[in-house]
Amino acid sequence: MSDAQWDEVIHTNLNSVFYATRAALRPMLKAHGGRIINVTSVSAIMGNPGQANYAASKGGIIAFTKTVAREVASRKITVNAVAPGFIKTVLTDVMPEQARAQISDNIPVGRFGEPEDIAQAILFLASDEAAYVTGHVLCVDGGLAM
View 1 (cartoon, rainbow, N blue to C red):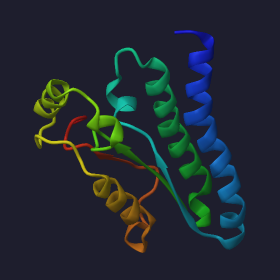
View 2: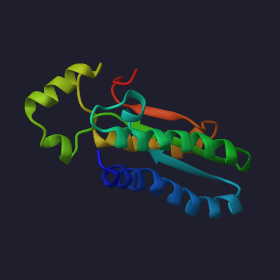
View 3: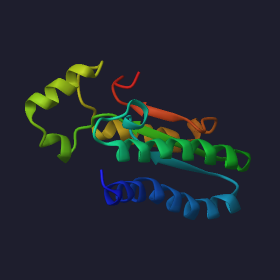
View 4: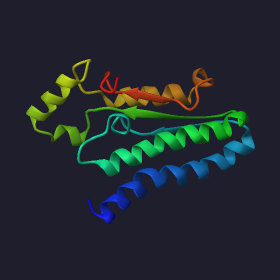
């Protein structure tokens, strides 16, 4: 892996979360409340051969999420992350059928997730029902990372 490949993925996936969080926290700190939900990946938990940069960037998001959650919890701001597994998207649609079948065989629920599965997890973490949840990583992966 070249330095440029490493830097591009770290910058895109991890630095962007830092910059967005910093911008979002300013008004939340003044308001004494808010929700931040970051998107990571089960690759951060399981690793992914050939994608050390991606897994490291997503692992960094988990560490960042937990740290910021501790820093702002007293201000009634929660910070959590959702870690999707394999979700039906344009990218997974172009995978060879054999590869999709092999992956599905390794997912305990036996299928790829739907985009709505991720949306529902984020909606929950953004809701008042999740007011006592902070610093958590919610894997939405059909049991893949358990």
